[in-house]
View 1 (spheres, rainbow, N blue to C red):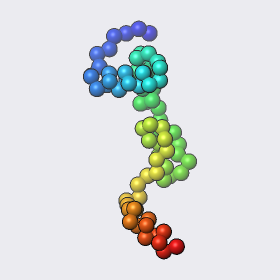
View 2: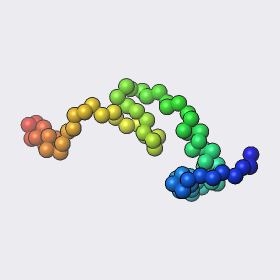
View 3: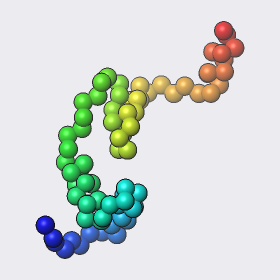
View 4: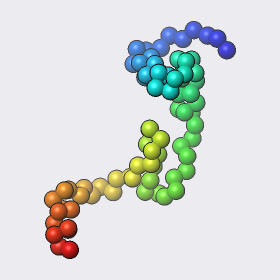
Length: 78
């Protein structure tokens, strides 16, 4: 289907970069991005994992931050 769209500059930039990165047309890129936006999020293999916007699994935050100093101390205890 052929149509004309008026989209905001930032949305055009995202679609344009996406199209160039994948080697596809701008129209195909917009179609893929719209489909991704309406797809339900895939089921995670674990409740602690979620799918990031780039398609990679990300560990959900537990609220506890582990610093490099804490790691260093734990390694020294071994």
